[in-house]
Image 1 (cartoon, rainbow, N blue to C red):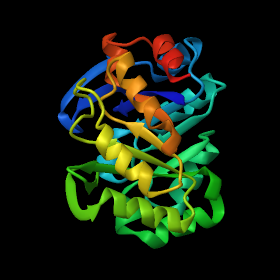
Image 2: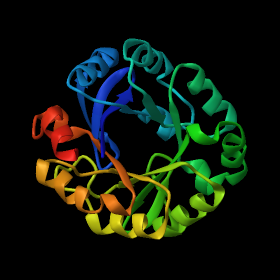
Image 3: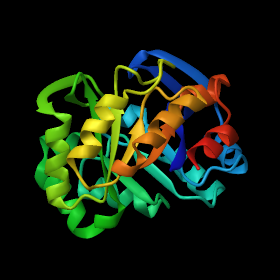
Image 4: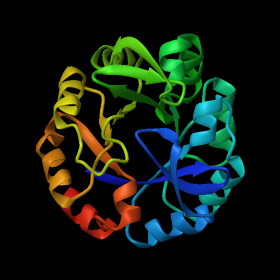
Length: 240
């Protein structure tokens, strides 16, 4: 199982939110590239980067920082936040991003997602962000009536290569992941799933390892790395 350290960007800084609320933001660094190098040096095999400003505004807003990250590290980077069209995806792939994450378009603009898949199939990941089993969009500001499991099945039918499944209620709360929700999604599809939200301690990774056979490819860890609740080397060792 791959451990993806998270680098969330807002106004060019590395930050973390609680439950996706921009008003509840903690700044951890003003050097995103330096943070990326730190995680690479500590053993990361890949990075998860989110343009939070882009996620809320619908337009990529931290591309300078993204480019600095991709130029600083040799490991692959997946990027989400504000990627709503085929052109958005092409733009960030040109910056050296390995995988572009589309979220809102998967629900609100299916033709845009399909257009990106036609050209960049293996490099497009769909992010499914949910609370109480229902998908949220527009930077988690708007709830929908679509279930996470239902959307996962639709994405599999389209041929999406990977899914990132985030439980909003646990994200940034240091309370452990929602194993039941992740199990439900992973059991419903054959598409590989990356877990996100709530991972705080080694035992959380051990719990995720138990459902790895269902197709859980990796886990994203954010706030717990920045607070020191878990070290990256310990997380990687547990994931192996």
